[in-house]
Length: 119
Length: 106
Image 1 (cartoon, each protein chain N blue to C red):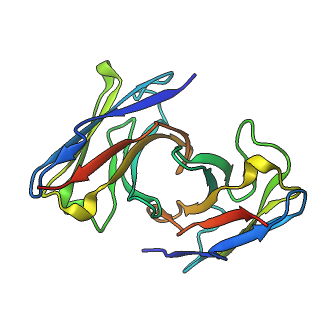
Image 2 (image 1 turned 90 degrees about the vertical axis):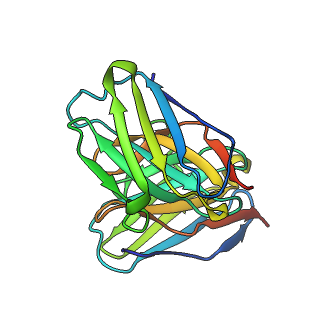
């Protein structure tokens, strides 16, 4: 059974860097074809894809946020870490990590973690 | 960036009736299209991928069709648990989501 869980701060100040961790079980990020993605959702708004990392350490980023994002993996810990720099109140959202099915559908999602950006 | 446009924004349907949700891509995404259901306070749930393949455990009343730029999600006979927000997502060129369709009880 695949599960994922996000963790990180619930409140960050403007201009700070956000670091979120996705801890997963039921699969390995060293297995060919496996990937994990991050998606966010501002309150009452639509989903927005942020980043993807694959088993071979290939990384993909949303073009609009690429300069602010870094995604890494720790295969031994079954974790994926997302950092986002220069946080702004518009970045207030629930951040989800999810298991990638095939080319780009997300079949299993974490419960999400709400991050508020405020001074 | 490929823009995904969903219509209508809100759809009111009675239980037991059929619901048809639309999703249009600003350029062809082939069949690289997924549909998700999201209920309040919950993470999205994958319904359909590859435009028409039901995900594991998804009831047969959910079906997807289309290719290229025009896609449809059909729920054949609405159950009470189907009233939610539905998102389409393309993964042909990076990843983008639509703005969602809220399916509400009529």
